Structure formats: C-alpha cells, structure tokens
Image (cartoon, rainbow, N blue to C red; front, side, top):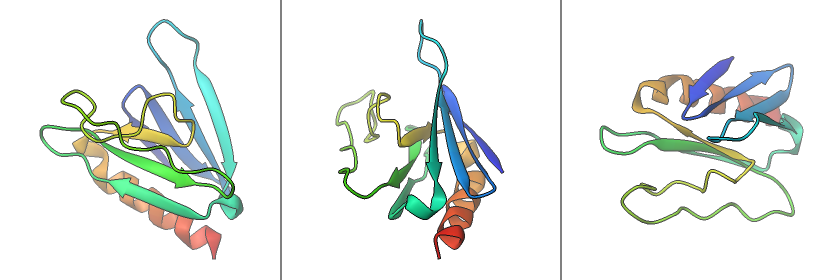
Length: 106
C-alpha cells in the first residue's frame, strides 16, 4: 500500500513503513520504521486550502510540532523524518494506510 504525498511518498509493506522524501536541490531520502515500534499515528486530512499530514509516533521521541503560518498550514516541518504532507486527493488512501498500520500494531 502506497500513498503519494507532497514531495514524497509513504508505503506500508510486510510490517515496515517507508517514508521517502525529496526536498528541492537534495537527494531523495528514505526512512524505515517497523510498524511494531510505532506507538501512535496522527492523520490530519488535507483541505482545499491546506495540505494535511500523516505522522508516526515512536517511543522516546516527541512528535514534531505543527508549524504555524500561512504557508505551513499547520503541518510538521519537512525535515521531520516521521511525517509526510499529503494532498486532499490522498486523504482516503492515507486513512487506509494509517488503519493498516494501526491493525499491524495490535
């Protein structure tokens, strides 16, 4: 299962979450997280005006705070390795991915 986000994607295969991010002018980076290690998930759906996000919470690390401002739209910063911004069109796919991760955690 894969969700295309803003400047990246997040996939969930065989109990592993892979977040791939590409910032302007930098090489693509991948972050792998085992679903069993995730202590919680956060999903903020995208709207017509602002992108939403998917965020995975891990033990021993505080969740990245939402950036305030007109251009950030209440999302974690792009540098956060455990989250990915999503467009409004990806809301349903992101909800299914989060549900699959939550089911794998149990």
